[in-house]
Amino acid sequence: MIGTYGSPEGQAAIAAAKDGELRLHDPAVRASAVGVRLFDPEFVEIGASGRRWTYEEMVAALPTLHGGVDGPRIEVCDMRGVLLAPDLVHLTYESVIAGRRARRSSLWRKGEGDTGWRLYYHQGTPVPDN
Image (tube, helix red, strand yellow):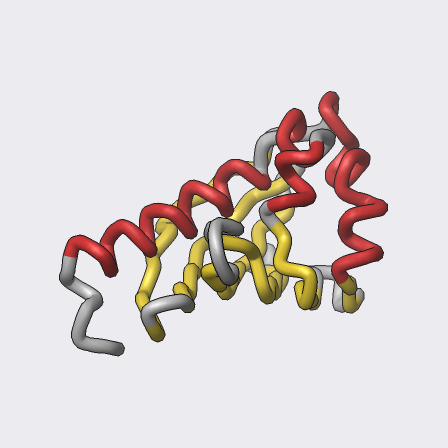
């Protein structure tokens, strides 16, 4: 963990990453251009299904992901963030989507210039029913 973790800048970076992550759980955001702008052009995901997603694949699927605007809500608990570098935040949390639980890990990277924080990497790991 870097020294600025507890600083106002570090806390602001973690808050921005958390905000972006939660915005991507909103079906209306996913179906809009706002959702697309939250992804880093080098984005990669290993989904809870085991599928590998690229930026292009995710952007194409985004509006209908998890059933689109009428799909189930994504419940989030225990979201935590750690500042790994001035421009890199690691988030971990657990999600429930239509009764399926997964542990999730995301890396948010601050873009060059005025692009803000963008999702660079995401991984979901299913949680067994037991």
